[in-house]
Image (cartoon, rainbow, N blue to C red; front, side):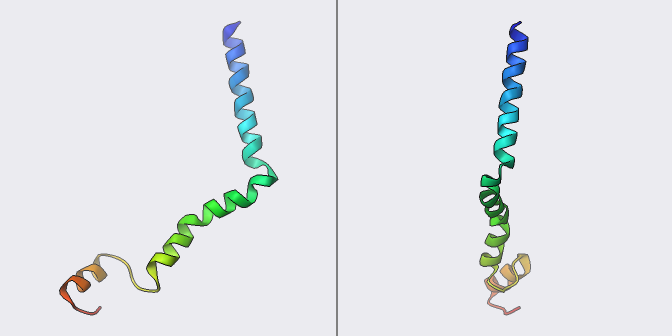
Length: 64
């Protein structure tokens, strides 16, 4: 009996979370969150090459 109640409770929590995540009201917030990593990468690069090569050149004073 207790196992059935716990199973039903967990199933209702799962279904509630699924409905919340797929609700149209949350779409804009989730779309913005999905773009955060891409937007951050665009602003940190600043049009310059990022990576070990550019760091090595800047430490020696060379220009790439």
